Length: 102
Image (tube, rainbow, N blue to C red; front, side, top):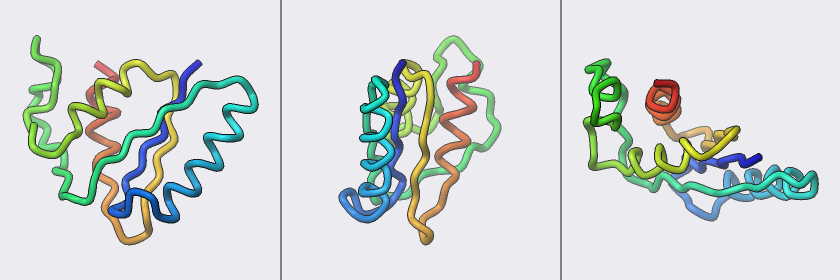
């Protein structure tokens, strides 16, 4: 089993990372593999419902925010832990879930 820990905070090694690390350590102690994905401090676009992810391409039409790279990792995972700071947007999780559910 593999769990992807997604850090949506603009600070790569801040409090959100620390919290996700604690979760990751607990999962590792139970024999569960973990992997981190950092979304960066730049903007992440909202899903616009265009349907591109349902086509043969099977990726998000937006390619300038790193979500497609995270989606590649997400497709290999069995579970997810989403972490974000209280001041950052959280729309990225909807694009990831939408794309891996097809």
